Image 1 (cartoon, rainbow over the protein chains, first blue to last red):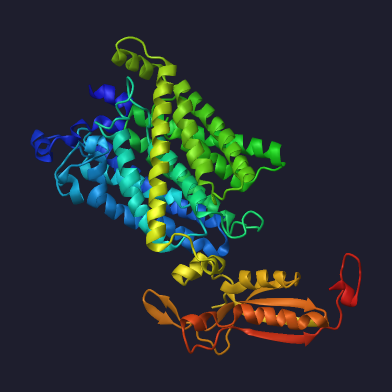
Image 2: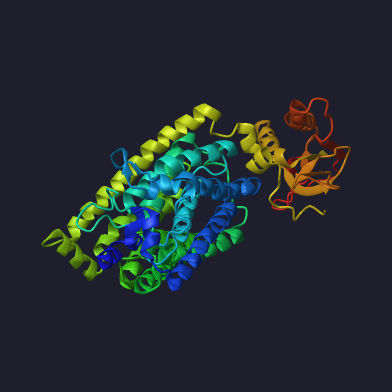
Length: 444
Length: 119
C-alpha cells in the first residue's frame, strides 16, 4: 500500500496525516533520522530559494526599484509563514470541507496538535509542515515578478495574504492532500511531484492576470528599463538552482531511491534547459546572454518540478529543452502582444509549469504506468494520463485566474493596488521604504 | 552658449528628464554626486534617526544656446520645486540648485562642427 503511494506521489506517504495525532503517538512510530535529516536540509534549501528569488528579481529591475522588489520576496517569507502556521496547513492538509474546496482540521490551527506527531515516513510532522510552508512562501513571491516596479507595498502584502488563503491553500489541498480531488483524478492521480501546478502554473497565471489588470509600467515598452545588476541576478539564479534540490528531491519525503531519481532529473533538466536557451538565443539573436542562460536554467527547473518523480534522465533532458523552447516563444509572444509581465513570471513559471505538467506524460517511467494500469483494472495509456494532466492544468488555470481577478478587484477597491505615477517615477525604494539599494557611489 | 548645471534629488531624475524632453531639451548629461547644502535629510536605520554627512544627488549638465536657457531653467524649477513642501509644510531646503556658466566652445566630435550648431 505504502509502496503504491510512494510511486504515485511520495508526499502521500503521509497516509496517517488525517488520523488524530495522539493515535500516531500511541502507535509509537519511530523517527527515521536519515529521512528527517534530509527533510530538514530540504526545508532549509527551499527557504534558500526565496532570498535567491529576491536577488534574481532584484537584479532585473531598475536601480530605483531594487529594494522594493526584493522586499516582495522577503515580506512573503514573513506573511506567508505566519499564515501557514496559523491556518494554511490546516486548510491544505486537513480533511475535505465545503465539498472539498479546501481542508480543515482544528488540530492544525497554529500547528497546536502536532507537537508529538511523527508521520508514517518517520518524519516529525513539524518538519513536513515547515517544508510545505516554504512552498506557500515562494509561490506568491513568484507572482511579484509579473507586476514588479509598479505596485504599492501595502497592497502587495494584502494581496499575497488573501491569495495564499484563497488560491494557494485550496490548490495545495486538491493536488497533494489524500482526499484532494486532483490527487484522486484518473487511475493514479494527477501528477504534480513538487508543484508544477500548485506552485508554478498558479503563480504564472495569477501573475499574468495581475499584469493585465494593473497595466504596463509607465513608459513600457518604449522606455529602456535596464536590469540594475545582472551579476546579482546570476547569483540569485544559482541559489535557486541549488535550492531546487530541496524543492524537488525533498518532495520525495524520503532519503532513498526516489530522492535520487528526483535529484538526478532536476539537475539534468536545468542543464538541458540552459543549453537549449543558449543555442536558441545565439541562433535567433546572435548572442547567448547571461539573462538567457538563467532563463533557460529556470525554465528547465520549472518544467521538471511536476515531473521529477516520474521521469528518467532522458525524459528530464527532453523536458528541459522543450521548456526552453516554449518559454522562449512565450516571451516573444509577450513582446508582440505588448503586455507587461515585468520579469516574465508567466513566460517562465506559467509556461514552464504547463509544459512540464502536460509533456511529462510522454516520459513517465514504465513502472508508474504499469501500476496505473493495475489500479485502473486493465490498461492505462499515455493518452488517458494526458487527459488527466490537461484537466488538472485547466482547472488550476481557471481557478487561479478567476480568484486572482476577484482579489485584484477587492484589493484595488480597498487600498488601491497600482502605484501613483509620481511614486512610480520616484521608484519603489524611496516611495515605500525611504531607502536606497545602492550606496556604493555615496562617499560616506 | 551656456552650461546649465542642476543638482537635484535622486528620486526626481526621471521626472525632470521627461519634462525636459517635453520642453524640447533633448541633450543632457547625468552624474551621481554627493554633497550637502542647507538640507538635512533624515534617514532612519534600525529606528535611529541619522543625518548623513553627504547626501546623494544627481547632477545634470545641459549645454544650451542662449535662447533655451530660460526654458531649461524654468522646466527644472517647475518640476523639482516643493515636492517635499507638500508633505512637510515649512520645509524649504533640499530641492537643489541650478548654476549657469558661460560656455566657451562646443564641438561635436563626429562632424567637427563648432559653436551653436554643435549643441
